[in-house]
Image (cartoon, rainbow, N blue to C red; front, side):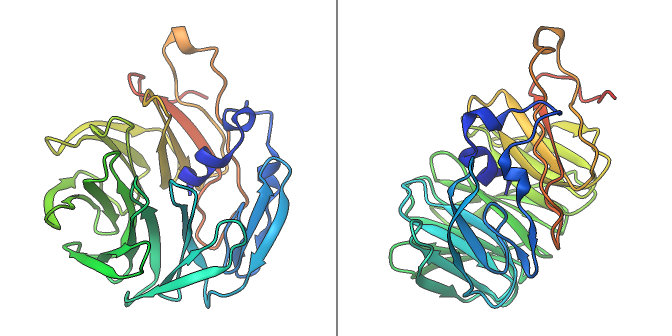
Length: 297
């Protein structure tokens, strides 16, 4: 979810001081979930996130929507629901093009490959499915997690997939073989979000253990544990230059991690979203890669 916010917010709203809020924060809980500027059991496509204008509202899922993703080429939008389906849509109208079925549990996360040809979906049935985004044909099912798979992320070259799970692990998969390459252990709670750095060498994960962790992808080794949140970390996202990491938690407290003195005047990012059935974001905290993990305030 934070990925969607970071990519779609206008530049003037991506980095805001604690005292300011973009129109994005006006989203409301919509009965069965939330709309798209908070996606819900039904969803809304905004014509302009800055203005918050609604373009269309679809009501074709039979349950709450847990995850959404735009294809990098901008030609498709995926919505994942507790009704066990993923729907591929026309991003301009929201109209359904096809429904992908096969999961035996809620679909909790979706992501497109960088070339937009493959869609990965994570489910509470403990599997990840890979689909051909053009035809809807199932390409592979990845098995190995011992609990819900909550999130998925492709690396920048599209050859590697990372998955996070309620089993407290992150797994790295080689997509050329469909085999597990590594299991990253260290979290003491379920993992709710994963994201690759732009260079593909570092992976971030966010967990209910109130930490985000940085991992060396090639070695499968933990580089650093980022501590300071007062609640579970539900979302992580690297900046485009890979030098900073934003993390989001369900706690209402808005704060920033301590930065080196040279960067102390950089404004604090504060993304605040209304609560949801499964609270994803109330606070966003930027972490420079080289910064101390001790918070202030």
